Length: 198
Image 1: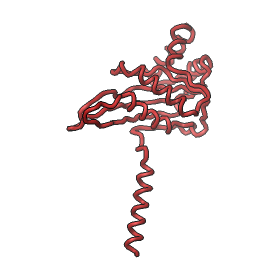
Image 2 (image 1 turned 180 degrees about the vertical axis):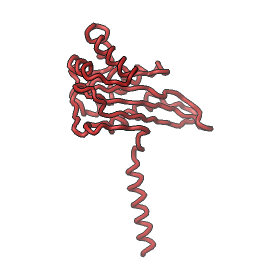
Image 3 (image 1 turned 90 degrees about the vertical axis):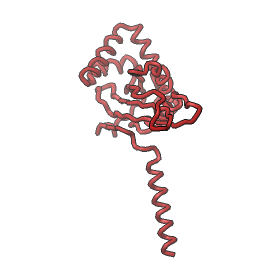
Image 4 (image 1 turned 30 degrees about the vertical axis):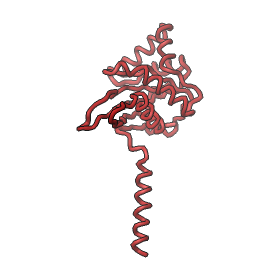
């Protein structure tokens, strides 16, 4: 009886442990203390920084917009395409956006005045900035894998405060048929966005 009870307890403990690891921890995550009170209703997806993987930009923008809308957390999702159109058609917005992104990339400074101006112009409470870290098919040892890595930053528009940032990757093995990188990206985006403050 004791042996059976012990085995049952071990089985329950393992089940709980595995359930707790359901989505493995993100490779990197930082949440600002203020994020617990941050409940954005309208989010803007900035154009994706695809870096060395320019072919990924449009795909990731479409995937991210789809996942943000599908999650149903936001009453409004401004797509990267809409942000791009504003940059192309409105000189005032282009100036705000360019200055904001330059400061963010060059000196890691999310300028509160510029951020507020962008938020007011596009009617968004928050911005989501996404960078593609990996987008390829590679060999890991003897295994063929599809690998997608993303980094994200969620910024409060009114203050410029980076409320949440995270980086993660998904690796999917295959034998003959390559999984579509867009499908891997969608799975990864769903996982990451589910952990974003809301």
